[in-house]
Image (cartoon, rainbow, N blue to C red; front, top):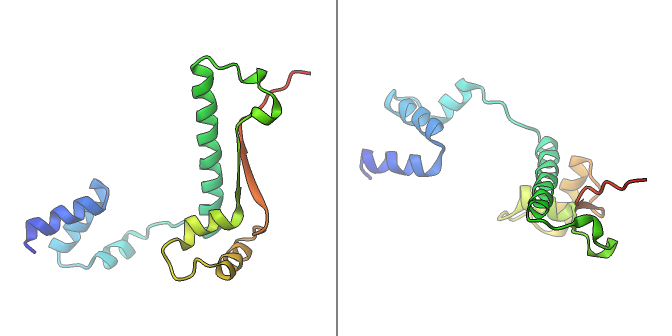
Length: 135
C-alpha cells in the first residue's frame, strides 16, 4: 500500500481531526498508540456509556414526539394503548452496546455484564412520549 493509499484509509476510518493527528504521529515516527497515550484521552466508564445510551434513546423518542406534533398530530387525543412506547430489555441494550459481534454475546455473559454495570438484566427500560396531563 502506498503512503497516499494509507492516508485515504485513515481518513475513511476516523474523523478528520483525529485522522490528521494520526498521520502527523506516523510521519514523526511515533506509533498511533504512543500518540493516543500521550494525548491522555479521557474515556467513559461502561456505566457512563450505558447511561448515555439510555439518555440518547429517550432523546430520540422526544424528537419523534416533537416531529409528530410539528406535523399536526394531536397526541393528547390518543388512547393510552395507542401511545408510542418501546420497551427494551437491559440485556438487549448491553448486548448491542458492548457484546455485539463478540464471542461473548450469549445469555450468561450478557447477564454477567449487566450485573457488572449494576443493572437488572431481567428488567426493561421503557421509552415513551412525555405526557403532560392537565389536572
